[in-house]
Length: 130
Image (tube, rainbow, N blue to C red):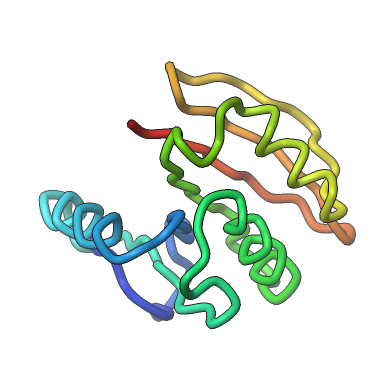
């Protein structure tokens, strides 16, 4: 697996959005190097998000969700200091026009969230760290 900034040829495994960026992306990139290189996680460079932290990542998610036509899978990694409960994240999604179709806690601090917006469905994996 590899972490790519920007885009990759073909459809990525998921788009990765992190609260404030550089260190998180470096750690995730190092982890990805341990896996096969056939699949890719994409860490998109979105000017809207630069310098913003925490739940502001939902603005970036909204922009990407509207722009992309397929491969609507997102891994959102946030620090616990920025999101106290999963419900805070879900409320941010709803405020931006997402319908939350289902939420499944897959482990402590990690949720699978099935969403819909503008007639498109996607999956958001929320991981709250720290």
